[in-house]
Length: 305
Image (tube, rainbow, N blue to C red; front, side, top):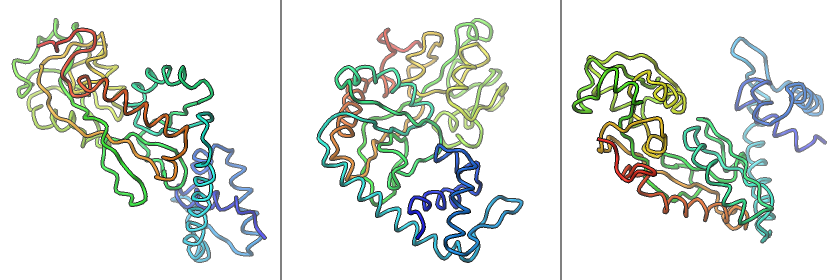
């Protein structure tokens, strides 16, 4: 009999295509992943992956057992969720996955949740990778896209508006655009293809004719930091730009917006510690709704025209 836990390693390798990537996802050494794969292959008496230029690819035997492993993993996760659902205590760890841009907002807020529930620990998984809630890779997600997974539930908690920003030093050097639709002659900080669908990237692409692109970034935080130091003007989410003392908002208008969703598996929504985090997230989005909608500048009251 093989160790059921080895299926986690099998699925991680199939998903990522390499021992190193699977190890990063699982939080272990790559040698551990290789050892567990070898043990599983020995027990089953079959080679499950072949190494090639593109990484590890499943053999016919591997392809045959992967759907069964997926089903077993799903059932194990269901058992774990239902057992943990009986826990009515607000203590332990809750893993929240969100984008790098949103993670800074939550990091500034969770001290209040910790004050309410001292035995609660929040683990923030930030980045552009979509963690699989159905497979237990995270407990909660805050996303700026609709959720299509049928076994998850999503609640709209806010609207993330975008506007145009620059550092005062840039405005002193180059002036402010007369209109956000006309950026000719200005230095702009834009986004690469991985962020090409965000409202700010779409705006800069549509209205940036004649502008000088001085930097592209695959991170909204990196773009914000470049704008902070006067490299150029850019479009940012208002909750970030209006909260940044080093930036000046160049127009009171909202140039685009995305809905923000809180996503959870229904089994976990009954767990006290997860429910406490969900309620807190809804609370802070309601409190800061004007900031997220771009209706005010934090600590000032009006956007800078």
